[in-house]
Length: 116
Image 1 (cartoon, rainbow, N blue to C red):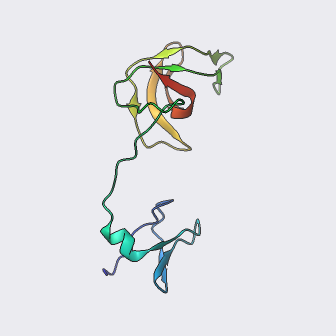
Image 2 (image 1 turned 90 degrees about the horizontal axis):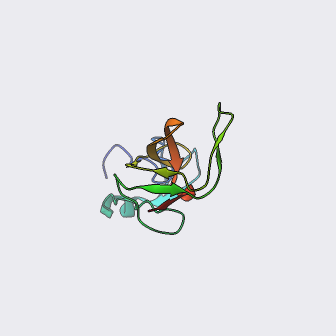
């Protein structure tokens, strides 16, 4: 095993430490096996919309529920079409980067959109 321990697979904290045969994250208390970390290859996680369709960069989606926007008096209505999305690793589950007509650039959660 190398001198540098791998980051936590759950929260990506770099402060993991060894406790017996396990590695432990002090920030989220996740425990995992050191052998499993070395043998696993990083896998792409498929991002799915609200009904289970796999999303990809450049897809068009529609909004499935009204969304309140901070700093705006109006909300994004159900059925609003968003074109040319980009998948990102955002904050708090916001994994779609897009530009919504009338609102500008923003990030959306995949759970509030449906692939067209």
